[in-house]
Length: 328
Image: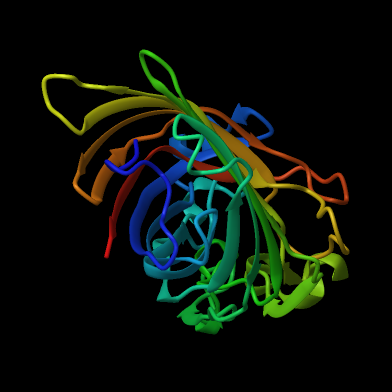
């Protein structure tokens, strides 16, 4: 759903974009198979993330705009019982949950996007392409005190990769979006791929911190700086009794590939993807648009890593996405 002036930003125009993303994940998957035994024994990992993104877009021409995106991790946590307990160890060895938490500025990006069709002539359909750069402005070695896998030797260690505010590497962004107004609805799609050509950063992986660095194979001792991707496609339908109000339904996929498209693939990562069905609601008034959607997971797939080794990861059952934009 777009504002009353459509998706186009005039030359010299400024748009403020703010978004929020929140979820809690605690169900483990290896491949597409859920590891229900983890919850049965009460030793599943619980991961929480609350992220805000502040965006500022400037219209360079009628067709081209640049966006500065400033993410901020409001709250991240990764908790597991230490010692881990069953099914990996006898029941009586299970320890209390230890929570790692983090917050802080994320990796800032700058992206230029251009519409391929003349915006003065194509008000009902268009496609844009974008190229950008991501800078390593976020902390990639955030630390807290927690014990090793045996629940002993509490000391300051790097928190899990999933809640590090940044990834420690420079990256390149490619994205696209498109829309087409029909008689009954607006079809839309968008996609983003983040290329991270750097191999690893200097942050010890969670397995190194829990097991001891010498007990982890060299290729997995430090965190990877992985590629990431996102694609969404759907349709928005106006709710005619209320001007500016629309409902939408989309399909979403997002994930981390086992191997990067450019550069080496070493380091610790949890490759995999999840697909979602995403119902949403939006309201446009003058130059402002408010939106909310709740993606509900359909498929979770924790893929093997670059060494063809299986693993597990938690996936959220649903997410909350909130967006607000307005033109100055």
